[in-house]
Amino acid sequence: MSAPVAGGAAAGAGSGGAGSGSGAGAGGAGAPRRRGRPARTDAGSGPGARERILAAARAEFAERGYDKASIRAIARGADVDPALVHHYYGPKEQIFAAAIATDFAPALEAPDVVQAGGPDALGERLTRFILGVWENPDTREQLLAIVRSAVANETAAAVFRDLVTTRLMARIAGELDIPDPKLRSELAAAHLVGVAMLRYVIKVEPLASADLEQVIAMVAPAVQRHLAGGV
Image (cartoon, rainbow, N blue to C red; front, side, top):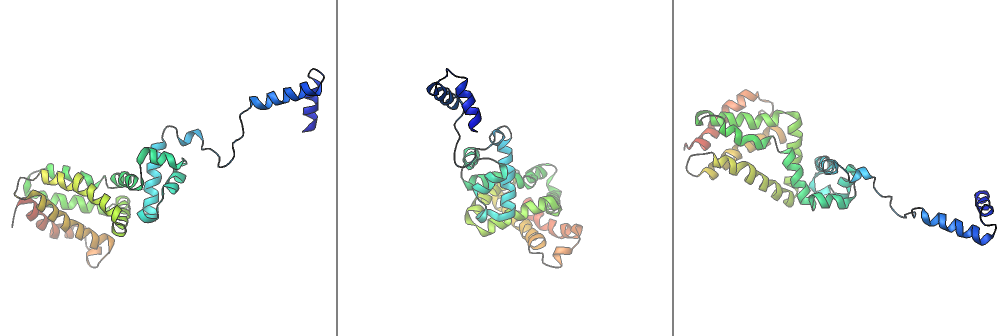
């Protein structure tokens, strides 16, 4: 290291002072070395950062649940600074809401099923659709992760409840031309959620291993009574 410095001094005006001044100028022109934690790469806050954060959040909540998931772990999974997670999504409950809205998206298409045909087969259509979402291994794992978080933590339960009531049940009730549509849509949902919990979460036999078509045939009439205005 000393040889280049001496050479630089000799190439100057011939005095030690001139050489020192030249060395100081070269040092000042360079970027100062930062201490502490290394800065994230430009990719960390560049295009796609928001999507990476959401993907990391979904993975973190699915693996660890709401209680054990953390903003720092989500940021680490997305390769961004934790401050960027707050910037895009806010506190933990808000990024949880964004994550479960994505995971719960297949079930949120249920109101479209209600609209798709006449009232006579409404119970069968909705029952087949909801149980079909649970039958799919990919969507089932996502729903199971949401349910576990909602059962274990009241904040997570409140976020999930708001999603279900505003984006699912209210829309279904809005499609029903019967008295007490909100109550009836919730009773239908309670029936379907109960079946899903026993079949896919708790796995109570013989329901857990029963043929899907048999389950639909037995559940759909009850759902039909709720949604079509029967007693």
